[in-house]
Each structure stands twice: as C-alpha cells, then as structure tokens.
Length: 56
Image (cartoon, rainbow, N blue to C red):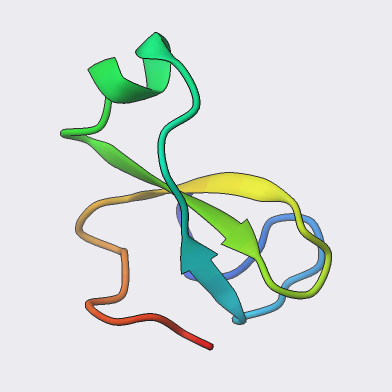
C-alpha cells in the first residue's frame, strides 16, 4: 500500500479494478483497488500514490 509496485512480485504493471464489497467501498475515499498484471494479486494503493492513468 505504500509503494507503486505489486507487494507480491514487485511488478509495476497493474490496473485499477472495481470494489468487491462494502468494506472496500467504505474506504474508497482513502484507498483504490488494483490488480497486478503479472501475478494477478489484488492489492490497494493510497489514492495519492495511485497513477493518474493505467500502467499497462
């Protein structure tokens, strides 16, 4: 959540995805959900660290 990389594999290839449940929607003002393009892991980034456009 603190870096602009996948926490599982370290890839910078990721894209934004939709929220999956109510808890994610409740914190959507703080974090944005992403999915890694290399390993497929779902993770979050603080909104101020998120890229303005897609990375792939």
